[in-house]
Amino acid sequence: TSVCMNCVKPLAVVRPVGPEDIAGAVRAALRSDKLTVAARGNGHSINGQAMAEGGLVVDMRSTAENHFEVGYLP
Image 1: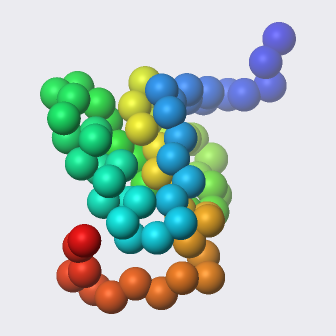
Image 2 (image 1 turned 90 degrees about the vertical axis):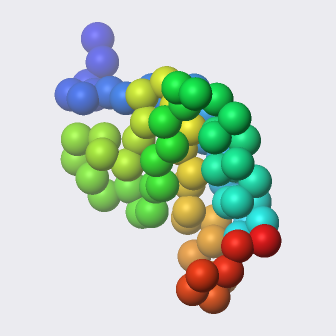
Image 3 (image 1 turned 60 degrees about the vertical axis):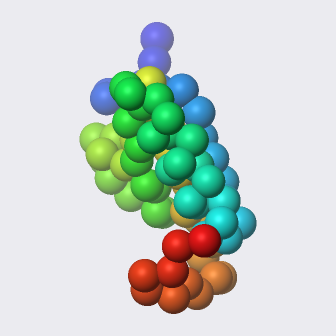
């Protein structure tokens, strides 16, 4: 038995290092007509709001020490 109340299982999880990785992941997801993308920060949502069932999760925790320019897109 699982202890997970609202388990959401993504197809893939990406852990970007910088803005280029984030942009690349989103571009790749856009090539699919049915792939949902969710950005995950610290994972504090209790019902899986930061997850994408069968989609792509961009796990932003690996970028915590980085600072990005607003509007910057490689």
